[in-house]
Amino acid sequence: MAVSVAPAAALTQKQIDACINEDHLVSLGEWIAGCTASIESGRWTCKELVWAYNNRCWAYNDKGEHDHAITDCNEAIRLDPKFRPAYYNRGNAYADKEAYDRAIADYSQAIRLDPNHANAYTGRGIAYHAKGDLDRAIADHTEAIRLDPKYTFAYNNRCWAYDDKGEYDRAIADCNEAIRLDPKLRPAYYNRGNAYADKKDYDRAIADYSQAIRLDPNHANAYIGRGFAYKAKGDLDRAIADYTDAIRLDPKSALAYRNRGLAKRDKGNTTGGDEDIATANKIDPNVGAPIRR
Image (cartoon, rainbow, N blue to C red):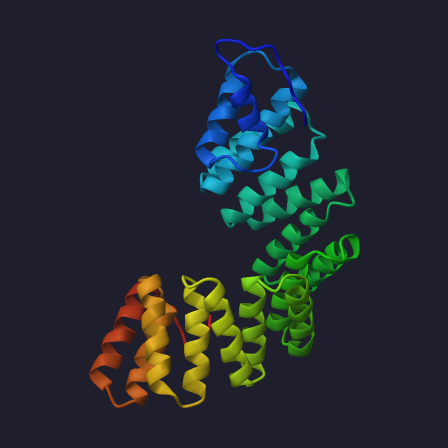
């Protein structure tokens, strides 16, 4: 949205530009501050205020302040009940809070206001996936792909959903397409690794987890996945090393502790294994059998 107002002591063009953040180059703090100055200046019309509240909602959510985000999107919607971006951004905030039913309602409203909004379909698909409704998740990602055939994240998310549904070849095909479109898309290597691991094709799984780690050395789950694959191949030393890296990156990962404990037991280190499993149970009493993610 192009906005220009006469300079005023309480509002500068720099603050306006920061709130608009057209190229997403300003920091989250500058983005929020620019929108706050714009809102509080008293210089903007209702239409401009809607954008300011919506953009601050977006910024707050990216900062992890989901309740502040929801409050701002509520205000944008109050000012303009047909403003589609605010429903989408509020849906993202609810999804990040794991309030998936509310997220689905907001994404659905965004879709009603703009049936061609591919991002809203894939957002809703992720929320359905989180609720365990894999068929609806797949349907939404499929619609997002129909609307935007080069939408890498929709292919990646459908890959994930197909894998969880047990349709591993379809999952691999979707992750292949995501990687073809963006060879640096780290989540697609991780999800394809999961699908290969589920097919017990552990060498390919290890190759994909390794590429995910190269693209993001802080990806704890990729270490867990690779550790699982190494253990399945009987390479306990590498499995333990990977679980140890996962714990270094995420000291509260019950999965990493439990899987490392079981690998230590298999290697004959019963005491070390029991200690790791006890730690896992303290972190999450419901942690179960060794799994990759």
